[in-house]
Length: 101
Image (cartoon, rainbow, N blue to C red; front, side, top):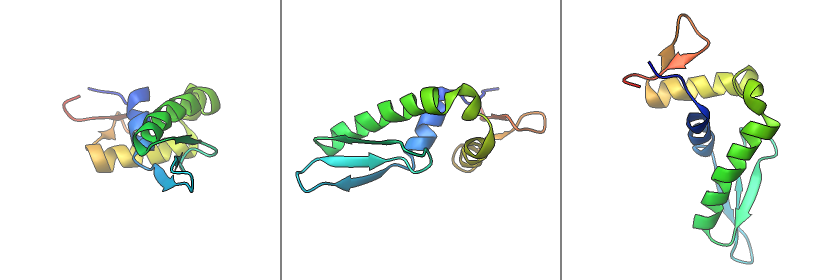
C-alpha cells in the first residue's frame, strides 16, 4: 500500500503547469490549480526547475499539509491520481493508494 506523499502532489500540480515565453526571452510558469503559484526562469528549463520549487513552497506554506490533503485540492489530487496512476480509495476514502506502491 502506498499513500500519496508531498512529492506525489508536487508531480500532480506540475502536470498542470502553463508555460509562456516573455518578450525578453525569459519564461513564466503558472500553476493554475494552486492560486497565486507563479514563477519564472531565464530559460524554459530554468523555469521548470523554479516551478517545482514554487509548488513545493506553495504546498508547505500556502497550502500547508492540512489544506492540500482536504478541500478542493484534495478532490482534484485524488481524481488525477486515480485517472493517471490508477489510485483507488483506501477503506472507502478519502485517502487513496497507488497499485504496487
